[in-house]
Structures are given as structure tokens and as C-alpha cells.
Length: 201
Image (cartoon, rainbow, N blue to C red):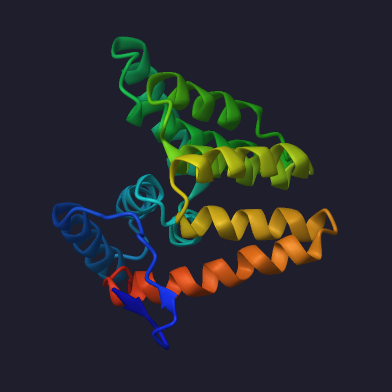
């Protein structure tokens, strides 16, 4: 398979099952029809996040009311206690805690929840990406970069992780590395678009 001008090989981007794409499209439609519905927005953000669409997931998550985050915490803390080995519960808690702690710029609870996800599902690349994002937001760029590198060792064509790594290197003043990963992001964006992985929000 050839990419662009016929010189670069097409990236083997992560494949997303049709059922998951259909679920995202359904939630996108619901979200556009009910933009103030916190449950729909949260569910859409989590679906995006769990499949690697970090930028899209974060953008939708910002629209959710912090009051809804309180409900999410109550629900999923309880569910996590009763079913401690289901990775989706701490994954959702990670985002809810972020909402509640963002003003304090203290992401300890979010990071703890996401690390719990990795105890259950050690190769969950996108959880590593969110840990990297939070570490970067906390000013710990070197730690963020290490998480990105760990994620890319599992999934080399994870576009969102390359974007986070480019940002991390930029903040570290390593501009050549930042540009290199930025170029990879540009190439992968084209591949994602060609594969139908774009969403009209």
C-alpha cells in the first residue's frame, strides 16, 4: 500500500473494529442533538479516549459539567470496589478525578486511577497516553516523555502519543525531536482520515 506521492510506505495504523466506530458515530449524533447532556458527552469522551482519540476525547470531556463528575465518582468508586478487576472503572474514574482536581492542579487521584488500569491491563497504550498528558500538565516533562516512549514501544503508530511526545520534546527544548514526531503526526493524520477515522463534532 502506498502513501501520498508513492514514496512513503503507508503506516500500519491501529485498526478499530466497525462496531466501535459505529458506537462512536451514534454517540457523536446524540451529542450534537443534546450538547448539554452530560452523560452522553462523558460516554462519548470515554469512548474516544479508550480507542486512542485523545484530542477528541479531551475536547468533549471539557464540555461535561463538574457536577456530573461527582456522580461518576460515586458510581464507579462503588463499582470498582465490587468488581476490582474491570479496567473500565478506574479508567472512567481517572477522568472524573481530573475534573474535580483540575482547579487545584493536583492530578494525584487521576494518576492513581490510570495506574490501576495498567495493573489490570498492562498494555493499554491510551492509558499510558493520559498518564503522559497529566504528567506533562504537572510540569514533569521527562516522566511524560518516558510514558510516551513506553506506549510507542507497544503501538508505534499511535498518532496521539506522537503528538504528546512532540509537545514534550518542544517543552524540553529538543526541537529536532519535536519536529520529527510532528511530521509523523502529519503523516498519520492523513492515514487516519483515509481510514475514515475522522469525526464531525
